Length: 226
Image (cartoon, rainbow, N blue to C red; front, side):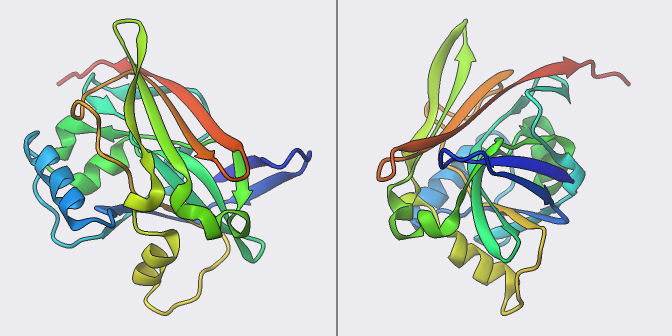
């Protein structure tokens, strides 16, 4: 899947990236208690507990999209803001994605629920080397629109998640990263519980370099027919 990013460094540089291998890292919290909380949060919705922590889901690259108007089946889907890292021209880059998920299908199969929905990706990226030293201070936030008002849905620093280096080391198991590899690096718990929303905003803020990655999208519901 072809993605295009501008660099968040006041330059006009554009990256044309062909993602050839996409992984979603699930249950990627650094704090075991927080991971257990998220597992219980999903179990309350009928989602089975994972067989391993963290767990890596392969998802088709054609599910990645930088569009802002998307379509899903039914009204039981919702987003999850996550750091998005990709390997391009010999180095790692950082952007932002939403692991938009079908919550009804998730009660039967987490892997299938992740495959069923398009994964929105921001259009801006940073060099990993520019943020890795203060990675834990980056602030991830998402909002959903409820009753015509934006409410904070997720918020916290990346200190609560395993670093991309840790996740990639576990996934690659000694193999080398290759051009076009991308990983969605885990999410934060939902404030007020996981719930469907058709309008979603997300940001990754760097308080050290004073810049922000942002993306917003809407989903239109296709009818469920049988």
